Image (cartoon, rainbow, N blue to C red; front, side, top):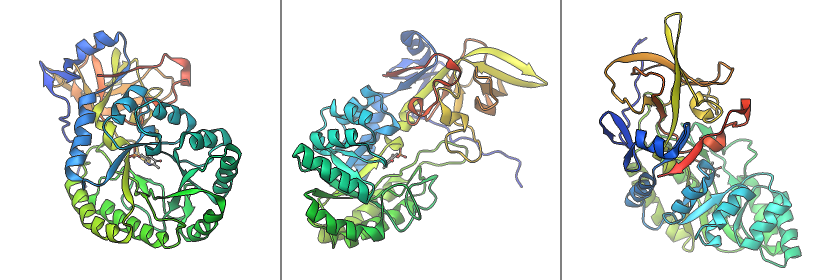
Length: 411
Ligand SMILES: *Cc1c(COP(=O)(O)O)cnc(C)c1O
């Protein structure tokens, strides 16, 4: 066994000047002054724009890109994104309202998620949003609401595929799942749909999330497209929308490497020829969340105190688990690993040391970095957590222990 711990790949999305991280065209120190408080989240709009451009460069031109806004629902981020992508995927009434406030055409917004309530469904029907149906009961509910409203609902069937996305940190398809309709039950559902007065748009097949292995995504794309072609044989109308999910991951932990997007794009190009032959009217959609925003965001908190306990240094900060659950290791991780964390105003520093970064909460779970090597920091210095543009603030229990919430800025 090796005792050498794998290191984080050096992150280069933000430049460094005078040993200080630069974001949004200014130094972190200046930004903190501008924000007026720590902790805060900062998202770099140029980095988001560049990420979408990178995808457009490597994916086949006819593929539409949707933003799965639960990754980062800050209204300013969603507004910015609406100018860059081809559609927005929402998963609640609250998200739907933010998406409808953008310039995005409502026909390019889709609504997924189990347990949709009548009020949510009615708003979606009235807005002309495509509803990704998660069950047969939901289909019946939508049909009856459509009748009440005298509007023909636009629907797609979310399919729980008969395979899973391999090497995926978060599996959302295959086996028994609360998401989507089991693939083998879809033909019967499609047969009923014709009688219900629903406007069938197509299929939504999402198998998993946070995948860094191009080969696993290539295999899932192939199986997804095959499944869609098979299911389309029973469709009441031609398939116009084929959302093949996303699942593109970003590197968070030591030893992880960025996804090979070129390989993913080339494979899709190859697969598209067959899809165009079999489903000539269908628009292929990829829905991405963290891949679009995750690397464009940082979380910033300030060191309140250096504390020494039996030879170990703890940097006690004003931020923590209540603002950034994922970085604390408590958002779906089996084994806790450190996010990339640096001292933002002393990237290299004059001295280095191994420290743990903790928050103000009275629980040992409130840990932002466990025994990590970084520049020696003093009270007043700023701790930066990279890869924080997705599943940050809104995925965190801000009410826990009742400390003030962080600010969010798009710069
Ligand atoms: C959460 C979710 C996404 C986004 O996942 P990321 O890992 O952020 O890309 C996409 N589609 C559906 C259906 C989701 O539930």
